[in-house]
Length: 389
Ligand SMILES: *Cc1c(COP(=O)(O)O)cnc(C)c1O
Image 1 (tube, rainbow, N blue to C red):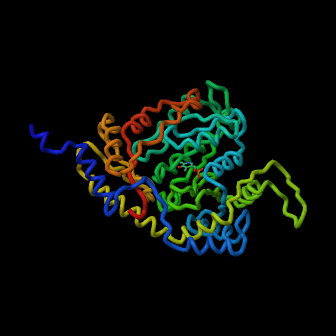
Image 2: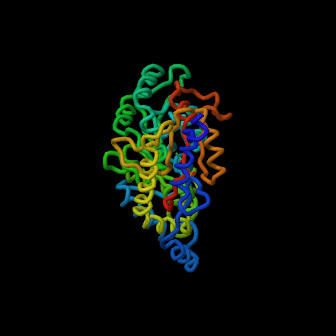
């Protein structure tokens, strides 16, 4: 009887979302960019001077400022995060028929980049405390499934070499990098950090991207900071950083007029026009991060103690950028109804990515037990996270 008058848990969740995300507005998407700084002035400067394309002062400035902000010695900008991942894999020597460990709960670009190398993604489970790779479960799986021969790690079932692990800092929350690095070392795997979502996220007071041999960043329109489309490869190894630059510019040998190319390169360089936008955005990054933490705190307080739902907070060893806020429902059966109702009121909440092993092109790839990822996928909803909310 009282149920008719009292709100159901789902209604309480919905009205909380509305009051947090729709202050003074009709609707809120998951993540929208904010252009409140020098964007117009810097883009205009490109147009006025004619430096719109693949070289220019903004490209260099953007890269140096990213190095300053992240503390990673060498950053090379590229056209998007997917091309950044592709280059990371090339640089560690991933070859056709190798396997690369990839979280099952991740954006499709991660597996696609592996496929571009002719290699095969091998899906691993995630951890409920980070939403990233589950270190202990990975360790047990590697021990069980593979063996080290002549300094290389092999999948005993497929016979293929497993070269690397791509660790994704899911929704901006850092994974347990110390533990994962140690596991990668022990099993002769290279670690690549996918920092596409983690610009401004710190693991034990150091910016993410410093544990992997290479790290990939994205500056797509929905990320913390945008260049329209864009990305970067970051590494501690300055020589490797030079090589990234070389490969992204069709491997052209520097010369005033000759077209000499010393290997198969790529046209992956970020145009100056996009870098101009990036420079203006980077000036506002500390402000974006502060605003995003304030929004996350608002959600955290509003959902605190509520039954049927938990707001996902940063792992204890990390300071997260809270790129995409997420709630976890107790009951997976509520997910689709909440998504439908939230769209009706203008809160453009979304489910997590479809697990990669379910996508048609990746159905037959090797994988471990991914029950945690399956459980999280069934209960997770991303909620509006733009800095200006
Ligand atoms: C956005 C994203 C990418 C790809 O970046 P693009 O710039 O869109 O190519 C890769 N990995 C993760 C985890 C991402 O979120």
